[in-house]
Image (tube, rainbow, N blue to C red; front, side, top):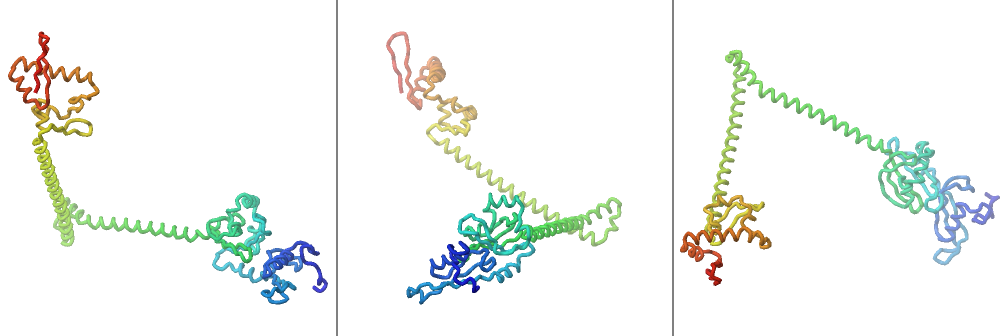
Length: 390
């Protein structure tokens, strides 16, 4: 206005620190086009964004000085018209554009768009509390934190929504496109209900078909059974007889298949039994031919088999007397000397003494043929000790 020509519009001027004064400082500092923050501009009595373009005395590359700044408001009318179209957003979706009131992180937010519904602009006290304590749950906060992403969030009135947010660095704006969860999930819920209904109908149809097929298969037999009970076999139609014959042939084929499988299984069992028997005979032959005493012990420490050499060492006639015997009953731990002297050696000495007393030649024969070295000491009354060994 002509009356305002010459008024100082910087922070030290008549209006003080305003969005316009901040824009002037930004243009003078960067010497290029700058955009102000969104807010109420007192000079034009409108909430908008200002664009500042520096004017130079000569081209900027020639060290020209700024002789003026061309300022014009950014028209938001077209933007508001575009945001109000809600194209493709159903009945609950909308686009939200916001900017922080100053550059300080965490400050209050200015919404540049007009809300679609009034509850977004005036949320209840509980929602306002959530804004303060849990701001990260709001997509607008995520956008103004200079991130680009999407996910399940809550809107400005704390309603569950799915939002897509982005940061526009040129304007320092955050933009969110959102839609209520209930409206998004409605098609999925409807489709799920339709699938459940369709599956139920299919199952009922399959049950009906199975019952019908079973009735079709059993009807000839029922007719034959009834006719036999009533002595009316001659009244059965030729078609029913054919059906019964077909059913009988099918049953016979099934019985033949089962019998064939049973015979095949028996054959495999016999072959496996013969194979195991051959392996057992081969094992027995190997054990019998070994010149060393050998025991076969199960995982519980009990004897299951012994070869002939071991049986001769133990003076046993057959495996029968050893099978099931705990191995600890035959061998004594070298640390258990009391058991060795208390049981085993006296028993051996007693047996040798009986052989010696009954047949002296047999006694020397046992000593000569013993598979392990034996030391025999004769404790006769004379102090002289005679040692016989082999």
